[in-house]
Length: 181
Image (cartoon, rainbow, N blue to C red; front, side, top):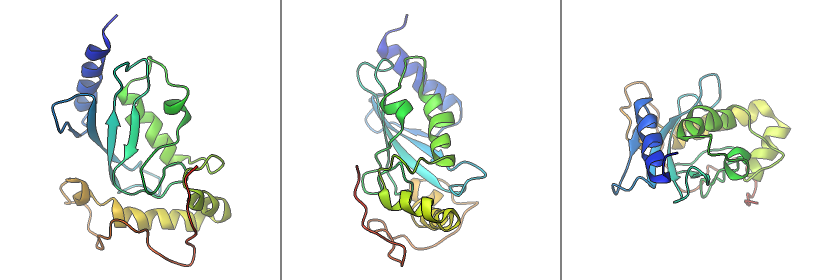
């Protein structure tokens, strides 16, 4: 059996070998950033998010802490903090899982199949339940506003859009007050 430190380093190396762009700001493999591209065939397609990963000392026996750095409109992701509500990470984590599971399966699945019945962003959940088509249009709008490749240091050779407002969500007639659970 490998030590948690060896497993952390091995999982991080596997993530990089699978072509994920990983930024390790302080040479500390317990906290780093990974770029996540929105899944094809989803309203998040074309968006790129910088995801903060913090591995506890007991990783892989304890789950990683995952948070979106740039804004994302999703029922299970808090708009203000980027906190993710995902049972497999928060409650059902197992040492059998690794970082590739998080970025190749868990997060893409969350983006493809949001759960509006367990929201961190109540506005997004209500919007999805009320009008899925309009919800998906709003997701695409937010992707263009907050998740452009150049916003997270990716060469913008395939994407072009404008408007860089960062803190406040755009106001429109569908906006409601959002409080995280």
